[in-house]
Length: 240
Length: 224
Image (tube, rainbow over all chains, first blue to last red):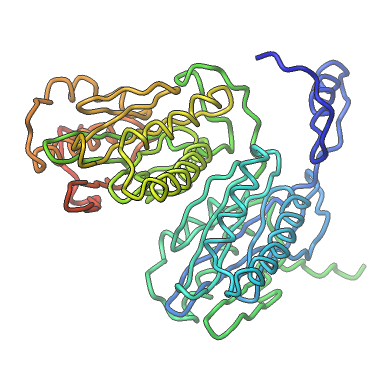
């Protein structure tokens, strides 16, 4: 289809993507700077009293660990939190934007925010950007309709599930969840399972590592625990 | 996990999901009977070779007695379904009565046709209204065609022979449900991108009834 050239109207400009691809293919050895990805394991499940989210804390820049203790569980609303995987900057900025919009929305409607609203706002935005915002998110929260868990992919598709895992370590994590998940678990069982799922990702996936962070959301409130578990501890260097 | 950008081709069958992009490689089916329709789907959503959701309900309500079945790119299909639901609700309010199934099919078709270069999804629309009774519409690539029954999705290729041989006009609702279940089960058995459970929705003047057919209850066929 033929389009006349239009003036850029703000927002993302993708004009350099074609140029970068061309440069990479024509100049051997040239590496165009890539956005930093959080090779990640994030997981979440619904238990009898609410939702539990878990995440590892490693952020990678290709094969170098850029941050050994980054926070991947982001605040959206007092009763809704979100784990982010994919491109670090995209996950961070998207969740901040959602948090801001949800506060305004709650003030406008006069009601407490709902998880379904966050999921809908997120996927409509990600769909609009056609996958160029590389954010994979697990949204969990407890609202007036009960506990809910959603996973949203970069192109804007979503799933409403009882347990899920995303990121480069999703394979090991989902295996643990598929094996041991039961509906209506207690908080202790649920937290134990989330930690085990993220641990599986940390141990089996090179892009995930360091500690496990957990966020428990119930009707009563939220509890975030940083570094609940550290599956792989560096051994002490011997004295020489 | 970074999703790759795909180069879109105009043919629906030429689009293969890139690594990381989520697809409802699917089997969907809708059958009309006297007084209503039966709509059915599998429940698998895949991204490359991984199954992202094994219990996804691909039958989305567009209105009280109108459903659509999703296939193709998960994001595109869900986005179209959301847009169509919103437009239909508004249309129903303006009409002050439930919209026609033909209106729903046209709403979906207009979105699919206008953005056919960018989108990669097929939504099948089926429902009941008091004017024409049960109706099934295919909206593949932006056309609008009413059919006595329709199949769609990647798994449908494996069951064209079965449905052509088995369908007869004038089936009862129960026979239609069995026909749909058998066809989808057969497709799930042969198509790698279809699987999980079968969701069935029966729409009549009385309302809509949803059923889920779980693993053990799936019909069994010859298996090596």
